[in-house]
Image (cartoon, rainbow, N blue to C red):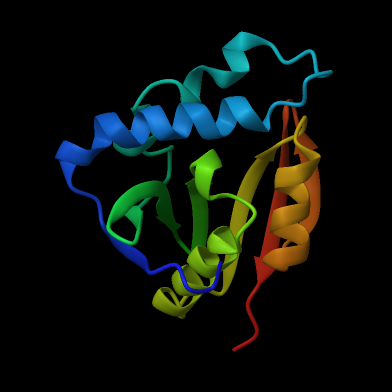
Length: 159
């Protein structure tokens, strides 16, 4: 709903346990009922590593919590790489707040905050057509390749 008051702010460490629970709910709900997804593929969404650990080559990172009308409802993690490349390492909205345009609003906010990024990358679970459609249709990403259980998508920014 467009009337939802959305706040994207730097994450407070005290919020991480609650955000980890919301992340688990969001990614568990995203697994199609008929998919045979290995539980090991969901492990990274069941603990707080994505809030603390950066991938090799990452120069810097920011963690954001998302609140809707003052209630924690999601998170985003941005990883910065050389050549003005930004990676959306994590973006989720709790199931109770999905399908209301909130993810799209978060993405547009992030694009505006990081207008120096020449390109964005994101990895989406190969088993989740819903997530891939979100990144392609709502955010403008394009398919690059499939790597194991993930699809890599890219968005070149026109500046």
